[in-house]
Structures are given as C-alpha cells and as structure tokens.
Length: 526
Image (cartoon, rainbow, N blue to C red; front, side, top):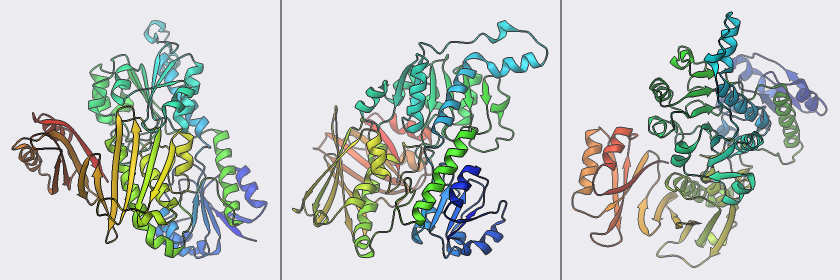
C-alpha cells in the first residue's frame, strides 16, 4: 500500500478519504531537515501553506509521485522542480470560492454600515447612533476588477442584493458577462463609476500595484474599496493618502503586502476595516479543500487524471524537444497580448504556418492560452487547465494550419483576436531555439523576449522623438538594451519598442506621455 505524508493540519474528512486507500502519516511541525530525512519513504505529500516544499525536498523525495496543496496558492511548492521530476502537483482552487466571496460581501456590508466601529463604541459603553450613519448597497454600483471564480460568485451575490454590477476583465467574453448580468467596462470607467470596488485578480508582476495613486485619483470620493484577493494588488501607501485626503470614503482589507502587517498605518485609520487573511477560513472551505485534494492525490496514485493539476503531465521527450521552444514562444505571445491589448476577448485564433503545422500543436495552444490568462485568473494557470479556464470564461479558441511558409519564416505562430475595434495580431517564430516576436499588428519587427521590460510607444514619425524618449530614460538612470522602430510610411504613424533593464517609474512614464508626438505608451514585462 502506498504511503502518504500529511505535514500540515488539514480537515479530518480529507485524512479519512486518504486512509481508505493508503497508509497515512500525519506529522505536523516537521523542521526542514526532518522533512528532508523522511520524504524518501512516501509516494505522496499533502500540505497547506506552512510546509515549504523546496527543490531539495523534491529531489530527496525519490519515490514521490504527487504533491497535494489543500488550498489554492502553491507559492510554498517548487512547482518547476516537481515538474522536472515528473511529480504532479494538485490543488483545490474552487474549494474556497464561496468562503472568499462571502467574506468579500461581508466586508462590503460592514464597511457600508460602520459595523466594526459601532461595535467598538458600544463595547466602550457609548451610545452614539448618529455617528455611525451608513449607506445602503441596494441600487449602488459594484465594480469587480476580475471575473474569475470568486469575482463571478461575488457578482451573483451582489445581484441578489439588488446592486448593479460592472466588471473589468479583458479575458471574459461579452456573452459570459451578459449571461452573468454584469456590464463590462474599461478599468478607468469602472473606477470612475463604481460606488464599491472589489479586486479579484492574481498577484503577478503586471498586477502588483494595480490600484495605485493614478487609479485612486479616478474614483468618486464616496467610493469604497475592498481587497480580499492578494496583498500587493493595492498600493497601500497610495491608499492611505487617498483616505486621508478624503478622496475615498473607506477601505476593507483582508490581505496585505506584508503579512502580518505589523505597524501598518492603515490599521489605525478610522476609515479602514481589516481582517487577518480570513477569506478561506470557514469550516466548510477547509473540509472541501481537504477532501478535494485528497481525492486528486489518490487519483494520481492510481494513474488517473487529476481535476486540478497545477503542472503539466510529461510529454514524450522527442516531441518536447521540438515543441518546447514554440511553447515558450506561444506563452510570450499570450503574455504580450494580455499586457498590450485593451480589447474585450471573445475569440482567440491561433494560426500555425510552415513546419510547425505538421505537428500536433496542442501543447503550444495550451501555452499560448496560459500566457493570455495567467494575469487575470485567481487560480494558478498551467498547461493542463488553461483551456478549461478559457472555456469557463466564454473564450472560444480557433486553430488554423497551413504548411505554406509566411514571408521567409520556416515556421510561424500567429495570435489573432477579433474585436469591435478591429483585429489585434501578434506573430512569432523560433530561431536557434530562441523565441522571436516578429509581428505586432501591421508592423514587422524582431524582438527577443528574454526578460526585463519593454516600452512600446505609438507616435508620429518626426525627427528627434526617439532621442527625446531615450534622453528621459537616461536621465532616470534606466539602461536601454535595444531600440526598434517600424513605420507605415515616412512622416506617418510609427511604433517604437525599447528594451530596458529596469522598471519605469510612474513619473518617468508620465514624462514620456507628455512628449508632444507620443500618442500612447505601454510598459510590458516578459
């Protein structure tokens, strides 16, 4: 019988499921060196957030076949190391949906009616009813930044409270939003419109500080902000300034950039209510997470597919050798589109030209969709679940193949997204094993996405524009690794791409936008 180690506390119901088909050892509080000493004896490891499953732990687990995380986040697991070893990592992304959604709504209502402060006042022997006059949520506008599992459930609950719900999520189809009863808006319009704003996106480099000083300057002074998603999505310093200056009526926070948030000035702000990361902390969620992950662990041990595999199953080595660089390219195309486009995505077209069209490109498709969605989904997106998540959001994936080459490229992968404003198109190829982005809409370019930051500008082709931008970056101490420019005709519209080694601060970005010839600019991290 297989052996399973449970190294963090999970619900007894989950342990009971495991015990039906395995020998289960529950050993809580193991020190890292102790875990390294014993992990070789087990075929499966089940954790929550306390145990750190590092690369040395994975390597020491010579018999490990599956690692289960009884919850959503897998930040404490070296997924890459597990994938290299062929170890499946599973989690329970939907187990906490109801708990997190209810907590969001609870904080919204508590914020609207000053419940925590009123309770403190009454406990102190006061009776000051006029001090705690609140607002009703009925008829108010709730703006949801992100419409994944939790954002969708919050929308349903808010509609039950007779609120109007608007949402910002470029990667749900209009049909999905309409069926849900949500009006899709741009982020800027949502911030200007909403009475309550709730954030439901993952924390990745492109979403860190998503709600910052610029965004908070757009909201109504009567608006209230809720964050039960991830600390770091909201710039906490900018939030405190907005509250102190009366540009925001209140904020409810369940998560912080640094946890515990010892000494955070937000905790002493009378306009803030806060809880210690309780979004998933219900008895039901803990039971569901434990049972859900236990069933998947047993499925993997029985050579059956897992419902929520965080990493991809192994691909035949000879096939992977050919497709791996194209998977890398496709993921970069998806990431680039997600950061450049402001269009609503309903249909995604993936076109393979040349030699790549002769192969089963399913992993390439999955990689592209992974890159497209990973910045907007609360749950981890991977090659296994990317297409499922796209379908759940109402996104239609269409593939086309032709063995005929395009231009001079032996193989070309093209991403096309039709929208009401036209067609957005990116294309790329692989040269000597490295991805090259070679087309951005009508512009032919050659960009190697090797990390770092890219600054894209749309501007009028006039003498000195490139020099002005480069001078601003140089004055800010930002090193430029390359510059490319592509134009439709002399003295017409031009696109410029600059590779830079450091992030571009808001004040520098604003200076670039202030250049007379610049029509638009966007910073991308790949």
